[in-house]
Every structure is written in structure tokens, then in C-alpha cells.
Image 1 (tube, rainbow, N blue to C red):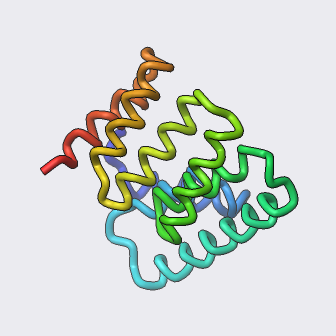
Image 2: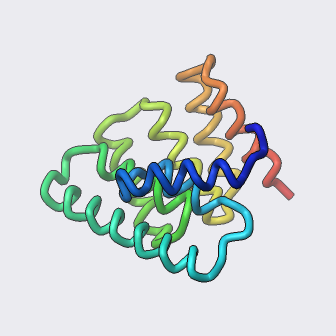
Length: 148
């Protein structure tokens, strides 16, 4: 928020050194400006490792919505198989319906796939479930801005 990208980068590098599979740190690092090709290669390897680990969890516990949700969250906000991420996100909602954060993730999947109307629809439902969430409100505004 302070706009100090050098400090943000240092903090994210420290976070990932302590836990290289921490999803929100991976996502934040992915969106840093001015990443080098080496940075992208390093980060892509960490994303692949994290999604593979989540895939193992999904296979071990197919009725646990959390690894499905986390896999979808990571891919929707970085890179990977968006079709699979969307399927996983939908499955997490089947297992734990009416979960605002899971709806938010499905909205991110749709937005990443270039489907803003579906993203908006999911985010509106998420906002109805958690009307006080500033994150959900901010994401709805972001998805509304994607409309042509």
C-alpha cells in the first residue's frame, strides 16, 4: 500500500524462504512489477510445486473443499490450467456451498478466463453473503471494470 515495491519484494522473498508454498505470497510475488526472466522461472517452479502438492491433497481427500479451493485460488491469480481451476472451484462450492470466499475464488477463475459477466455474478452473490467484506467489494469493482 505504501508503494515501496523494493521492500515488498524483500518481505515476499523472506516469506517464501520460510514457506515456499504460501499461496498469497506466491500470488503477490507473481504480480510484482519488473520481474526478470530468472524471477519468472523461479516463481513458476514454485507455483508448479504448490499446485502439485495441492493436487496430491485433492487426490487423497477428494471431499475436502479446502485444497480444491486453494488450487483454484492459486491458478486463477497466477497461471496454470484455468479449466481445471474452475472445475475445482465449482467442486469446492458443491462441498461447502454458500461460502463467500469460495465464490470469490470462482469469480477470479472466471475473470482470469476472460468471462467478466460470470465473475460479476459470482461476486455479487459473495457480497450478499458477506456485505461487510471490503475485499469482496473491491474485487466486485475490479470485475465490473473488466466489462467492455
